[in-house]
Every structure is written in C-alpha cells, then in structure tokens.
Length: 190
Image 1 (tube, one colour):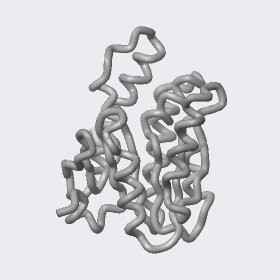
Image 2: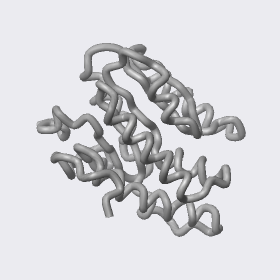
Image 3: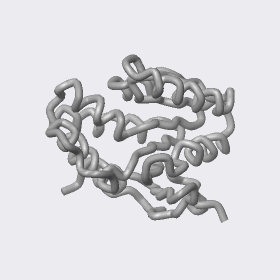
Image 4: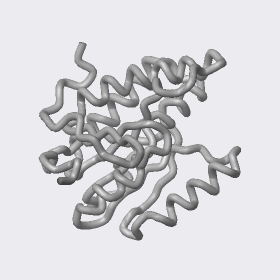
C-alpha cells in the first residue's frame, strides 16, 4: 500500500520529516503519477553557497524531464502561477522559503500573509500542489536570534499548514507514514 493511497483528492499535500529523510524523492514520485507537465519550485538561494548549488544541480538532474524547474527564494506564489497547464507542482522547501523571508528582514505578519496567499492560490489551481517542509523543532537549538526566530516561525507556520492541507505524509528514514488524509480545516483557523 502506498502512503498516499486514500489521498487521491488531496489537492494540497504536505510532506514533512527530518533533514534528508527522503521528502524530495517521495514528493517527486507522487507528482510523477500525474499525467502531463510538472512544476518544481526550488526555494534554495544558492548564490553564496557553492556546495549547496552543486547539491541542487544533482537533485535537478535526478528529476524527470517532465519537471519545469524554477528557482524563487522569495516570490514563490508568482512561481506557482507562472506556468499554465501543469498537472502537479512541488514546492521544495517551505521552511527554506520562510528562512529566506526572515533573512530579508520581513515581519512575521508579512511572512504569514505570503504563506496564506500561497496556500490560497495553490487551492485555486486545478492541479495538486505538494509542499515539502522539515520538522524544524527536531533539530539542534539555534545559537543566534535570527535563526531562532526563523525556526520558531517555521514551526508555527508548519502547524497551520498541516491543518490547512488535505493530506500529510511524514517521512522517517525514507519510509512514508500517512499522518492525515481528511478534509482541510480553515487555513490559519484559531
């Protein structure tokens, strides 16, 4: 049985887990089950990190040619609407996107608003959107204020995201565990 069985109607699917737990590979495998062109939205900002740039290049070359890849560290919603006629989109990675926005000095309210807009736009699209995120609270305690702020906001927004999602899969050492397969709750409901 596949971890996403019973989630055929999950238009907004979240895949979460620890770092390097198999989230990206699993998300692309699910997306590839859709007929038609696919979109991969990469949020990593690789300009100042050659090792990360090399890693992203390896990941890109491992994906199917059906994926159009766009790299948007901040303007993720624009990336989602940039291509028409896709059958599935993968956002990799929600937490990186949040950290990018914190790093640019955006307020918590502005970041929350951008996330809320992205989820609303994703829901309005006629394709499945798969959002990859990490369980930021499973890592070591950040040593500086900005990293702690980004981690705390990431954790809070993860909780809101999974409540808004139609389905949630937790990856543990490459194994998918179905956590949620039910109707979404109102986004950011109190």
